[in-house]
Amino acid sequence: MRVYANPYETDSCQSAPAGPRPGLQVQVHRDVVTADRMTDVIDWGPLLPPEPQPRPMSDSTDESDAVGTAVVTVSSDSSLEEDDAGEAIVAAFEMAGHEIVTRELIQRGHDNVQSKVSRLVDRDDADIVVTTGGTGVEPRDATLEAVRPLLDKDLPAFLDLFHAISYDELGTGIVSSRALGGISDGVPIFCLPNDREAIRIACESIIVPEAQRLATLASSGTDTDEE
Image (cartoon, rainbow, N blue to C red):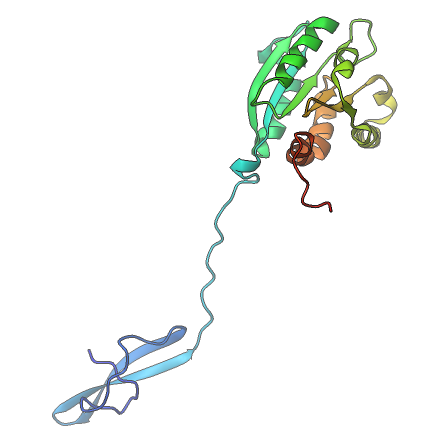
């Protein structure tokens, strides 16, 4: 079928480009002009807006921004299969697109906790270390005492936020629930209570949203948001 720029052009006229202009609705009708000649009549419809194109799906965290996370549960009375607190940490980081490079369960004890955290800090694939358990006020709770000497810098704002949010949601029971945040040899470390609700508050509200930025700053990176 021939297509003409004007409805009344015949074969002797210059033909239009093969196809309608973008954004126009075209309907073609057959109309008899003479007894022995047919011509194509173009009905240029009203201008139509372009159809919306679906936006591509993307992960919450780009692969280049994924943080390698080491998770340690400190407990003498549990196993990895029963480790709800450690599972809560893993779920929070994986949901944000980060990678769990190792997950371990170790016995309580000052030297045991300190040596394990120190080895994790030395790993090349561990950008952040999160522990749970051993932070209470019982005599055998020594996680904070074991980890604190490893820290080069404290993160006091983490404790302020954690206590403020925890009090709003959990009340005065948080007085026996200790926590710690700091930097050791360029690696952020967070020590959390062995409690799913406390972990949800700490990870989802504070640690996970700041994980990539903290890991970058602690390892001598630059923060583009600061001058």
